[in-house]
Image (cartoon, rainbow, N blue to C red; front, side):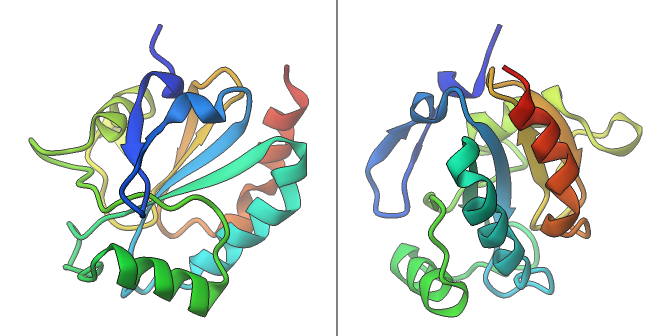
Length: 162
């Protein structure tokens, strides 16, 4: 059975990160963008990361420029924006594609494992969220409009599971 630990991704600074580093944690994987109407969700994502991090939770942010070209910057610009504007401390990765032939393998897997409405696989917009359990298995997909602060009960439920 595939798990999130079977994948790797480039961190925002360019080094390869085996996602097995996050095994045993509850994760929220999010495709992000700096110039989107949902960009203020960075604040809520960071709040979740801080609140639940000590219990074994992490947010993983994957910038993506596929929706309205709302992530035009390079890695340095993205990292600086996130740190200076929202004091983001959760792991950020290099810009990825989440749909199409060049979609990152992690997102290809997530979309199949946790389809959206009516079984659709395509990610519709920035700030689509995938909640992953401690075994590295996707449990739920949340729409971009779902605010991070609304995810507390689902995160707490998964944190209580072995």
